[in-house]
Image (cartoon, rainbow, N blue to C red; front, side, top):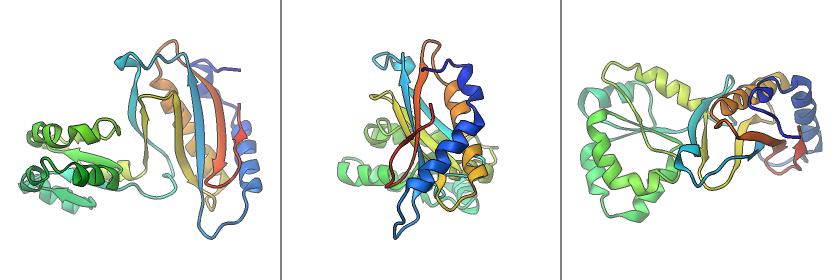
Length: 222
């Protein structure tokens, strides 16, 4: 049964807990630490209309399976702030312009980082050089105002998951990993579902929710 926009905000915590526990129990031991993923199916979402597409960074209370990688387009003082904030890479204007026309290198860069930040003056060139790769991936940079707390922005993004509903009305996100406390996984799942529900158009609903480990079977929540 589909959930309304309001109903998803009060998804039974015990239903989430039960499904997560079952998914963990059904998951066979692997030689790597598996993530715990949510699969969310949406209905009533007309993606032919651009305004119905969803692009958002949703912060999880306890972070996803691993910290997200963040890059920033910046120069001068802002580049220094970015380095002090611990971004994984600072991309100067010179480096950006040298990428122009190198489609393979641009796509590789777009895939290498989960989130991008940019100071305002570089956004025009970012769009011109890398827009074709960042746009479809839902990775258009978040603009960083001159007086912004860059460190706080980076810390938030490291704990965030990217939602990019563009062509398919379905979302797959990591809400943690199999070694996390189940309470943390439940809190992450609830936080994600509440945030996602707040971004749905009026007639769209969450139709089904599943939870699974990387290599394990999917367990239905609703």
